[in-house]
Length: 66
Image (cartoon, rainbow, N blue to C red; front, top):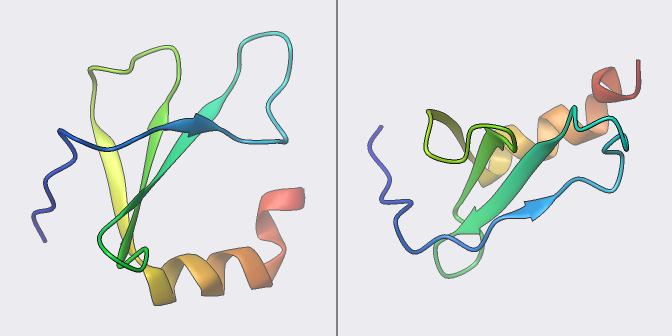
C-alpha cells in the first residue's frame, strides 16, 4: 500500500517518554482512512502505515500498553 504522507500532520503519542523514546502518529485521509506511525527521532525516516480498521484493532488489543 502506498500512501502520500508528505502533507501529514504528525503528533506525539500521549504515552511518549521524556527520554525521547517517542512515536508520532498522523491521521491521513478524509476520515482517518490511514494512520501513519514513525519514530520521532527520525522524522525523515520510514513510517508504517495502517488502515483505520487495522489501527482500531491494534488499539483495542491493549498490546501497546505493555
